[in-house]
Length: 116
Image: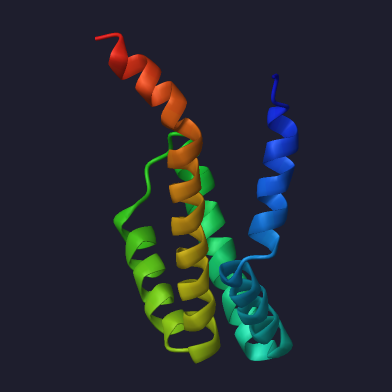
């Protein structure tokens, strides 16, 4: 019997949306965006983070000054309880996605390792 992988993927999407981890992430995100000061601080942090990622993807060197600025920004941002909780929820959701990715990739991993 042929399995439609896309149907399974959409089922996985629904499961993620219904998970406790996703619900917590949503709540933390709403809490940050309901607080204007926290929202501005978080958006500034995200902008800095995205700029550094983009620079890295383009093969540009990240300067020591940029690294130090990012570290200082993280320290300041994490002092805000709402943002710290959001970042914790993001990390948890990221771990879940990484674990799901391992499960999804298992057939290919087994295929390639069994051929050796």
